[in-house]
Length: 413
Ligand code: PMP
Image (cartoon, rainbow, N blue to C red):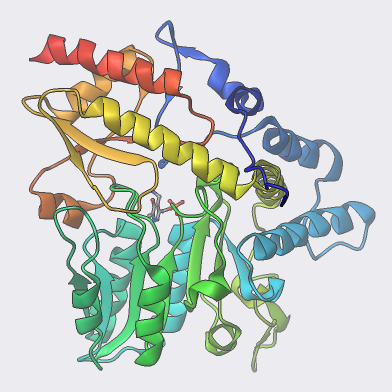
């Protein structure tokens, strides 16, 4: 008989013990933290790594020859290598460390797109993007005479791929798509999109902010040109993130910021720059943050992407099943493949009122436009509530959330 491979099962109670903040109460109620798409909570190992950095290793990177300087540089460069392995980059040198996705995308906008764009060119994005994957393109388009086009989605919140592909006309010089929607949880078929872009010689940027916290990502297998991630949504400290890019792009891109750390030699008759990725990392980075990010990546490694994904999908199905029983509740985003992000509205109630009352019950959800105005316009609503779950959430928390919703519904309606 063949040995059966046992699927790795996530022990949620053990996992929760690693997150000190999950133990706290708010307004006298146990915290139910369902705002993970906004920022994740941090395990003790990440918090301790940041603390340890400042207590034991604090120095600046690259400049010092003393031991502390070497240790700080090793921590910073170690995070680059760990991130490279985490997203399966071919080389750590293809990973530019940034303050987060917003900086990563702006780097591509100013350094890759702006020098190439001219009047009549277009950038293709989608209706479901976060503002971070819209506004930088609008700014460089305005400067260069290019335009930004947005591919449509359907009522289920899925990208209409045929239409996206039909919009990949010769004027399109760059395509920009989110891997996972921060509002709908929709997982976009990035491999297929990348294949179509490559056939036409159009580079593709993928916003991976909401993907890496939920699934194993392999940037080489995806076949895109640029992949942006943010550390604070993947258990890491705020102010950390990265841009992975194909080497050939990084080689041709001029620096975005100028300053220390990114040069080879500075002369008034001509400065020469360091090789990528350092060419794009002027100034002192968030060294302690990256020491923490290394621990976040190790945490995901111990957890296992399959176990995490299986549990999150179980939680999503459980939450959907119970939300469906609440009269007048409308869910935005019913994609076939989605991560545990649930946007919804209750008929007759304002999103902000609901979120405020839920907070008093201990339930943290986000209300608003979620930095996705065009998506709100598509659905014809000013705002939604968003419950975004993580692997450390439980079915008991979903129950508490449903009970709180039913209670505040009675108060409001
Ligand atoms: N893209 C998406 C899909 C996001 O959800 C977010 C964060 N809300 C961002 C970009 C911006 O990330 P950051 O603020 O960390 O740069």
